[in-house]
Every structure is written in C-alpha cells, then in structure tokens.
Image 1 (cartoon, rainbow, N blue to C red):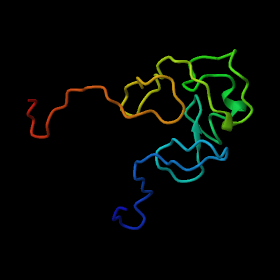
Image 2 (cartoon, rainbow, N blue to C red; image 1 turned 90 degrees about the horizontal axis):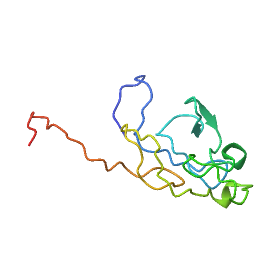
Image 3 (cartoon, helix red, strand yellow; image 1 turned 90 degrees about the vertical axis):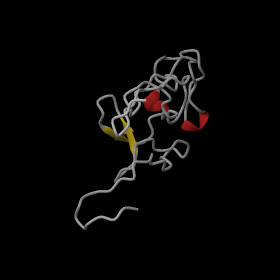
Image 4 (cartoon, helix red, strand yellow; image 1 turned 30 degrees about the horizontal axis):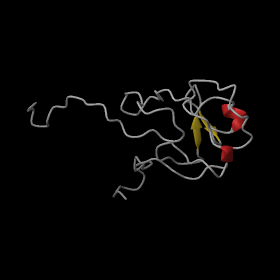
Length: 124
C-alpha cells in the first residue's frame, strides 16, 4: 500500500507476481504488473502463457542452456522440467548471473559480494 495522488500512474510493489499460470503448475515470475501474466520471450516481449509449456520449451533443460534429447518427452507442465546440472546463468535484476545449479522457477537472491559506499561517504 502506498499513499498516492489520484492520477499519478500505476503502482507496483516491486515483488514477484506469483499468480498461478494457465498451466496450473507454474507461477508468474514477472515483477508485479498490471494485465495478464506471461513471460518474456528472447526479444523481451511479453508472451501469454507458461514459458515451460512443452510446446514452447521443448526438450530444453530448466535453465534453457541445453537440449536434453535423452530426457523423456514432456507433454504437460505437470511432468516437470529436467535439469542439466550446469549453472543456471540467468541474468538477475541486479545485473549479475545466477550461480545456482540449473533449476525450474525463480532464481534465488543474488549473493555476489559487492563494495558499497555508505550514504555518508564512508567506505569502511
């Protein structure tokens, strides 16, 4: 909840949406948004539906880096997405890459150490 003047535009809490997608298995991974849920395609356009739908995702692993030709062919999201065991490497909102092993669903928070200057200017 945020106090705003009427007509100031849309408000977003900044959290992950999390609404259940049409597949009934996966949840929207986008940041709080208006309108329909979906996912970003390669061109960063929003596409309705679930990115892990077997018709869309095919035989790729959960992180999308590898095609797992030997994995059982999926016919629905309820079957789960196989993992390749490699690093996820998805681009996080902070600009770093996910270091977790290949996984389905949202990436964990970034744990990359960074130097940060205090508001007062002190670096110690």
